Image (cartoon, rainbow, N blue to C red; front, side, top):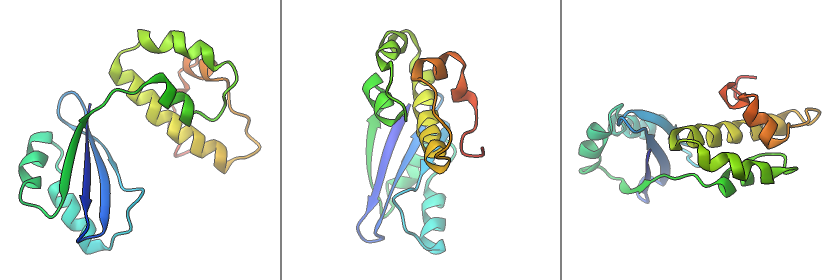
Amino acid sequence: MKRYFLSSPKLNVSAEVWYNERGLLARLDLVNCIMDTRQLNYLTSIVGINESDFTERSKGSLFAVRKLDVAVMVEEFLHVYPYARNSHLVKDWWPKQVEGLRIRVYFAALDYREYCDRNPRYKPKIAMQWLKDKEYLNDWKNL
């Protein structure tokens, strides 16, 4: 996975763009952005489905682009997961997984935490049980 940070003091915008191992757009994060439609149209004209298109278009844009290779650590996952009990069990499971799955689990944990915050009566599962039951495959944003 490749992660790009886009920032522009002129447009007062910052965003994150994630591309997977095949160079395809995986995630566009605009959580910290307050943009009008003109700025959003400009941003989406630069962010392409392919990483190669994005790197080419971003060269002449108003955005400063920083690129990072992504490796999600178990501590980052445990930090965003909403329930901390028995989290030591995850530390044995984590290194045995491929990086793509770790990233998917991390993003699902972010959505799961948001789901738990929206539904305070729901008690989150222990992290290892959540992983064993493959709950990360659920679309927590739509539940």
